[in-house]
Length: 287
Image 1 (cartoon, rainbow, N blue to C red):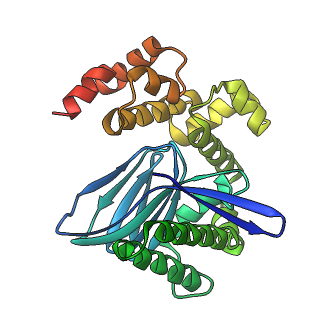
Image 2: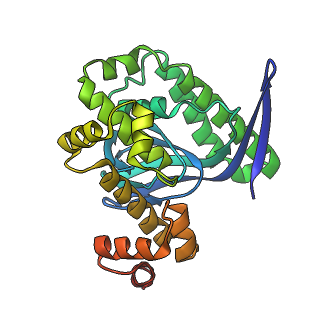
């Protein structure tokens, strides 16, 4: 069931739809894994313990308190690194009018999670907000369903507004020391991670960055050890592997959802990377 929240501010109307949510408090599960891939935005809030988040090929190590925004169709995995780990999550759909931070702001925000002082302003207010959300989720059984979902969506809306309104000095400090070449490659990485299901060529990247394709390839290889299109293929294959493990989509549907124009080419690339055809990979994982 998907619940919708309509809110307004001046002449703007925001629309959010709740898809899935939950609270977990795990004891004695060091190494436990959670996550996957889905076509929804997600707020993931860690309230106690140590964890490692693997998101779109990047590792984020956090302890105590952290709040991540995960973009749709991006593979993610949460690994428990302490004896006890508590966290809540909420998956939701957004429209263009909703207060979702920009893609660049989301990447910057997620990188800050291991550095933020949650006791200082304005982060103490944000922490109070997502602690209130945690308490609401834990009280779900005692509340009418419609009232609970409306309140949860209102809380998610509030958190997104708070994050979006605090994108200033800290974010700029994080980026200030980046060399120009690293900034360019980082922007290409973010772009590929956010649009990998779409048709993308070297010319697409050249048009996006306003740099010559040959220069982009050379710079990207220097920074990452691979070409932009090789990295794009890795993103698509990782997403495909998660769809095979965590969805009922057919191989044809997964191929299209991950940006492949030909199921035969997808199958060859998948077997080359994972050693098994997509259907064999799914069958082996289900045993």
